[in-house]
Length: 284
View 1 (cartoon, helix red, strand yellow):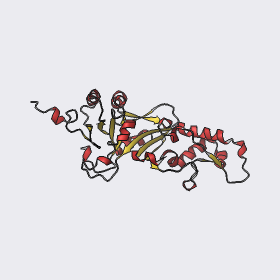
View 2: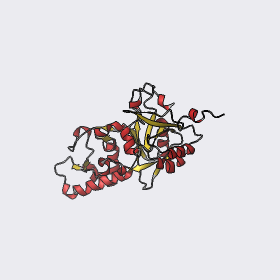
View 3: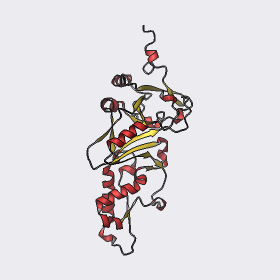
View 4: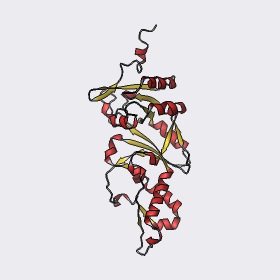
């Protein structure tokens, strides 16, 4: 059972509303990659502010207006990026359900409030290895990256110790042109641009599936081989629970309910909705 898992790297978790799960995710068995600019972090939704750099003292920066070029590069890079966001378990896990409560990715109250429809939604449990394999296979012809988010407070000053992610190398820009420079900048600085957030976000323990694509259409990732469990928020509606159980009947997907006991979430073992033994109690 999922609650007795000892490997903190086995599962990843995706919070969503019950309606999204019922209407789209579960019937289609897919997750949609969202535009990078649709996240809730201003670093990702607002334009990046690049400066310019060149090796020689005689470079004519006046020929390339900074604000126009910076805005163009920021928009172009972000328009290429699509992302799927997950959270992870925080090890070590003992495989003891009562001990591991603070470490499990589906027991995060703020995540439920922010992404799980104020505790009325669901949290999908997925096998990380299977989903990553599907992602790499589906988008093998595109630049795709899977990795954890690094949490770091850098302020507004450029951090020269981590490279020049927010500096346009004008020598290279002039040499190769806008499009080629943009892709080179992405490949060189994707970690700082797409996998770094302020430490205030650190409790999310986010793992990202990042795709760069020229297509303006939505991209989808199959979860058929990776979805193993669904956790229901403590305020999930009974009709939503039953609708999801109906859609997933016969798939072997585990359904887990959450209740609250004073300061902590706990498994709703006493609810017949989530306990088949109780549902069948007394039936001949």
